[in-house]
Image 1 (cartoon, rainbow, N blue to C red):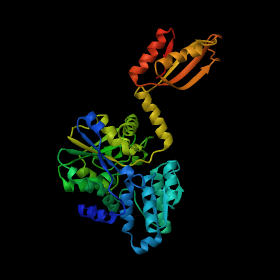
Image 2: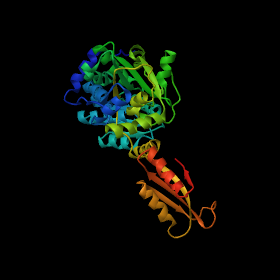
Image 3: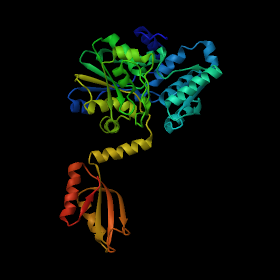
Image 4: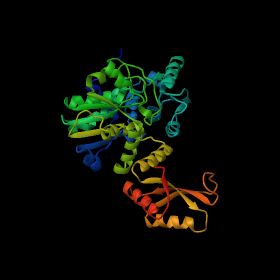
Amino acid sequence: MTEAPQLEDIRKAAERLRGVIHPSPLVRSGYLTRLMGSEVFLKLENLQETGAFKVRGAYNRLSRLSPKERQRGIVAASAGNHAQGVAWAAARMGLHATLIMPEDVSIRKLLAVREYGAQVVLTGSNYNDASAHAVELAGEQGQVLIPAFDDPDVIAGQGTIGLELGDMLDRDTALLVPVGGGGLISGIALAARGICPGVRIIGVQTESCPSTALSLEKNAPRTVEMGSTLADGIAVNRPGDLTFPLMRRYVDDMVCVEEEGIAGAILTLMDKANVIAEGAGAVPLAALMDGRLSTGAKRYILIISGGNIELNTVDRILERGAVKMGRLIRIEVNLLDIPGSLRRLLDIIADEKANILHIFHDRLDLKNPINVSSVVLNLETRGHDHGREVVERLKEAGYRVKQAF
């Protein structure tokens, strides 16, 4: 079996990355600090050139290839971020890369890989299908397989994040790290514990794919069924054979978060920290905000692992978040179908300083009498209190108001 990396391997990886991949910013969030009652810092790996931490491990692994291996070319499987990291590193080194990705991969991630000049093959419905095909291709064509997480050089590359935390690590600090196959948290834990043995390491997965959480509970790698999740970057149904022993040794706790919590965390990072995070990158905040941690810490460092999120996903999250915060309400009002009735309704809404986003005026609703029309409005408000004020004002004016949300 391949030997696990050591702290010295991570230090050597940092030297290889020097001047090529720059340390990501570590910023303190005033809002989250006030909200949680503990200092909260964000390690912004979403600001890497490829939009995610994966470029660290990919570059370190490719830099270790022999001249003969470079001539053979490389192949890798990924749902997106590892593919981008490998494609970027391969382009920088002048290597031919074939990336195997699921057929339903994010369009943004697919286009990014192609922009780096890599050959892309779409196959299967998830990472496991793509991985199996990559192994098959490597065997048939002799290309070098670059694992997404279960590789000592990949783990060491990801571990350079831990080295960058330096003096921030102490016994009162907890690191919250997204977990898919375990490469990121294994590397960070090795580095962080090497700097400060007392620092706490907490992994975060999703309720829809709790592979490592279950494996740690059973004390052996387990395979789980994968459900649909916003955090597709960590949707891995089994931890690695190399990463699992490292996680069992170094990780203090593994928690799981729900989809609503992930969406809320993405929105909070946008709204309160001006940070764009994909689902996998937002799970540490979801765990913190949803109270999933068993014990507290004076300082939390959240690894925001990536920011490659589709624009249409952002749009849906923003709308749902606006509903949750009371910033968007939908009401239905029946009006007499006579001139001026719609204007009088809209005048009241304008007086209450609510903004009309959408309006649907239906004169053909068969549930109503022939002289009554139905009006559905989506209104932007300042929050729950303002929304209630708008509805109450309409009721005081004699309207029967149905509120959908």
